[in-house]
Length: 304
Image (cartoon, rainbow, N blue to C red):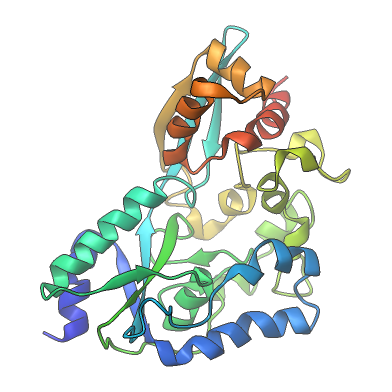
């Protein structure tokens, strides 16, 4: 068995999938993103909030890194229940947020098990979607979300530098063929962030972009109350996507907040030991305590 096959074997046995690429492609990965910014296809606002933070180089603390492993982990939506006024109000957290630390820890354990020879790993601060598309692990949908076989967009991506010289899966990025004649996400997008005349969406208009921002920023006027559909992020384009037909109802119950806790989250006065306990409770869901007053209020108003 090849070095790559043995190292990635336990991941695949677990139901995950992975590809690898040489660190020699890091400049090309940078160009994939930076060229869109230079050409004005990515707004300055979006670039500054998300894209400038990527580190397109071998870490100085890991100069022997030779490859990057990019991993896709199937993940359902997460149901969260809030008790308000004697009612149970269901909400969702999209697949890409929950269990980040737990999943990354498991991936490291599986890679170390597959290697069996003291492999070194370091999490990569890189555009995971670009890596997945560039290695054939995933394809891009018109909604600019990556899709993998069987699980569609219901997965999360993560990447690691390794000192192993693994197979170089570098290739041209592919867009999902199903998108050619489909406009389901274009028609459903509540903020018109996904458009017909170009494949790259207007990320700065996306509901996800705004409800991930600090609580004090509020929402722009074009985001109406009825548009909110998740505690964070937005699931509308994924829910209407025909490729997700087999997984769109894949959901697990994650937690429930009683009336007192819900009132506390809505109030937004986060200080002292209770705030620390609540933040710890939210961390596995990938949720920031400081986003709750605005996001939760907007979401609960939808059902009124």
